[in-house]
Image (cartoon, rainbow, N blue to C red; front, side, top):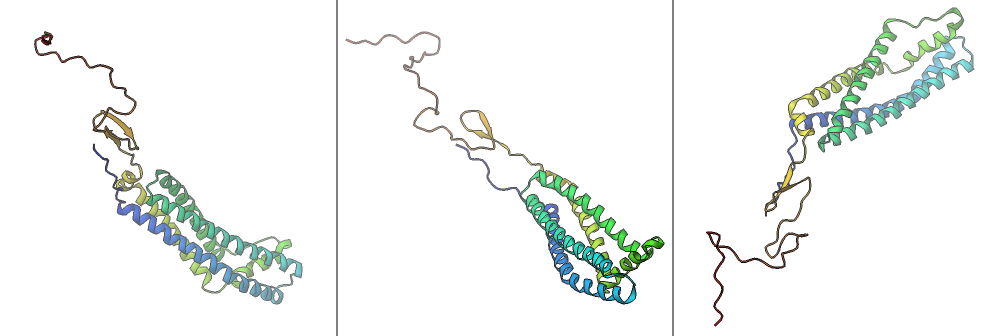
Length: 242
């Protein structure tokens, strides 16, 4: 009886590199979420002090913008943790050889590229083009203009760097998964198992072979076995019972 080869297929370096990069990006997302929460409290306090000293906004207007700033900080942290969990799941799916994980990774990579480009554009736009509103919204414009100054001086450059790293990371992962070695590993199929002695195949399963002491399971032996006919087609002579 022959046994199928049960050795697991070897993961190509392209899949390992893509999964490792996803895990690194997941760690970065968690670190960004923690840093965002750590910086958020001081940022809100600095914004309140600057708004009270440099603008004529009422306490209600300041509280409204401060609440928006605090809510955006918490939302960014939650999204960072969820993104990290998603990236970890995709990485382990790729390592397990699931073809659906590659498709999902391409979708996530495309979404990440879009978000990274939008985030970078917003950061550049805030510095290059000041916010301009109508005369009736002058106070709101002044308050929103103080938000960027309330963050630490290193926060905006770090965000810009992370946006660029996010764009490059998703791009590299998408390219690695399009290579032939990745496709061959993630599109593999279970080879059919041939059962020795029967001439049949079973895909993805192990079936018992013939036993040396009887017919295969499910087959009843014949009630009587006719005598063998010698070459030439003539029956054997009757036995002499004298």
